[in-house]
Length: 145
Image 1 (cartoon, one colour):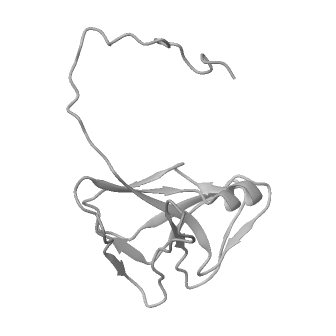
Image 2 (cartoon, rainbow, N blue to C red):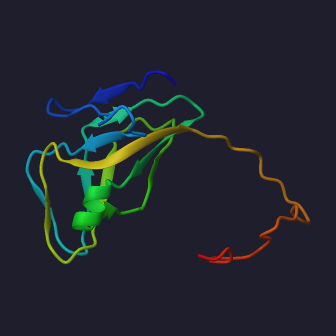
């Protein structure tokens, strides 16, 4: 996939932007008519004002922006948003305020990052056993610190 078709749905919407040449994803900005304040513990859906067209075999993933999460406690409500190749609606970012302070989102604020990647879906089959590994069925923390 060499080009990402993006449809701007409102005149004040912005294209997703790669912040630096080494950025793995695109910054996604809020497209708002007025400020939205997210109260502590609250989850709010934030419009981006754009839709995308992905080719079959590709998906977009919406992740937190490190600065918002670490400095302000603002994280995606569903941890990671998945945008399937057949979805053509507006990209909406659910944000949750995990801090103890209100946080205001303004038009144009960078609210998330979008990473596009190729995927594969092998056919699941039922088996009686799985190949052995050194770890085996060791659970969380089984490989140490």
